Length: 69
Image: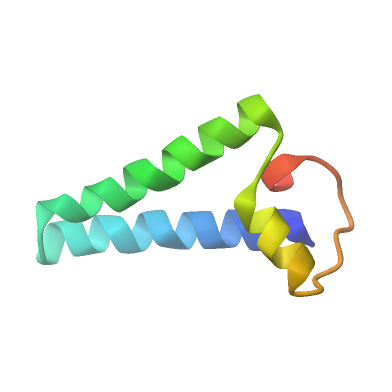
């Protein structure tokens, strides 16, 4: 379940960031960069903050891996 939630949130943040960059201010691209850097960091360290947050919220993890990968 974490896998689907994490990918959904990351994808939503990137799409929202791109839309805001197009219509509001180009600096919203920093949000997309932040999401990308966090995904890259979690692939190297096997630690994901969002996964920890989901665990504390009581969301069951049906898969394995960091950040749903």
